[in-house]
Image: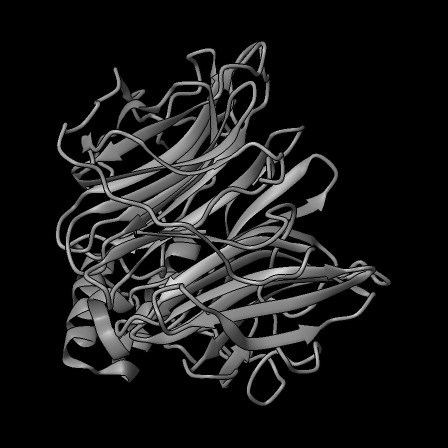
Amino acid sequence: MKKLVISMLSMFAVLALAHDVSMVGTDGQQTPPISIELPADFDFDAAQAELKQARTQGDTQRARMLGQMIHQYWLEHREMEPDPVFNGTSTNPAPEQQGEDRGPSGPLPLWGDDVLIDPRDGAQQVQMASTSWGELYAIAVLKDGADDWLLVRRSTDNGATWTTYHEYNFGTDYNMSSPGIFMSNDTIIMSYILEQTSSGDHIVFVRVCVPGPSDNVIYWGSPTGYYDATCEHFSVCTDGVIWGSGHYVYATWVENYMPDSTRLMTATSEDINVSSWEVPPVVIQDTDNGAEINETSIAFGSGTDALWIAAGAHPIGYPFVFDEFIVGYISTNYGSSWSDDSLITSHGNNTDEYEPAIAGAHNNTNWVVLHTTADTTTHANRDVYNTYSLNDGGSWTTEVWIDAHENFLADVWADNNGIGFFGACRQNDASSERIRFKQCSIPQSWTASFLVNDDISGVLSNVYGPSVTYNEGTAQEACVA
């Protein structure tokens, strides 16, 4: 096992591009949405079946048209009713609560010495990904005075040594946030939010690159372009593990579009050419009167092509009527339409659940959401819980994941080649700051937690948590940064 450290693990990190920040595509332009006119006898269910068939047959043009028709039908027929939580009611039952599963008692994975990914101070929040042949890529923001630098590092020896894949200085007029990096069919996909401080405009941005010794970007773009709503919590995934080179890119983020109001947004690019977003930005949840969506995590998994968004929710009436909880939304047609909100965790158990990270197995219908819990009244006793589903989110079960000391900021990753999950989180006690790691083959039976990094010098971030992945080229060896 490898444990990988960026110096000064604290604050914010992003992904960035080495292009003029006004560009939003290979041609610098946003593709306008296509107007779709539906036939009078349009059959939603039949269109979903045809969409999957078209993707299976590699008929991209037919798949794109069917996806746009499904999306148009959903927009015309969905109902967004107000409820007392955000403005709506969820009919899903509260999840079953269970005690902690301590997991098997066999030998735990061995972790090596810390490896410094970059020697400079000021690097903030790291995300990491691996190619199928074992190259590791780590991304962070490097704060240098008033400047934000993109920092991308590469390792070809399982994290023992690192070189610079890419650096870029955005200067003093731009702030970056919500980084993301992952591999899809051995193509690097990066995402981030860029804010122009002089204007207050935001853009959510995606960058597609080829692995190698230095930066080689092939597509870049944004589903939004620059606009004046504040954007936060950008999360991106693909379905490349299932669909290979025919992969789609899915994005979700939160807009703070007016005081005390938020909107959960989503968009889909029906290939990795992210200069064009065939399913343009659409609202799947809106809130007002102080309720808000304040965190997001998106993942594609499942043998049934399920796509889930898990979001942290701060409800109306908090803390006297409802407590904070994790809400979910599922798409079964590649982001063309979405379900109404459903409860992943309870909003009435006097416990706040927040900081969700979601992952789905690719060979069955198992899903895992790791999240922080705390007492609603005191905000103390932070633990990490495992809320899992064995049936694509038809029902959820919640159990303690790690509960000794203060535990928070968990991350979870699904095995691309199997059914297992890897998880990591931050842990504090009276004198030490730690990172803990667990893994499992099935969501209800994890190993005991294992210490990755015991740091007593107080430099680990209490704002941003660890990133967990695994090196596909070295027998799926877990890596934590």
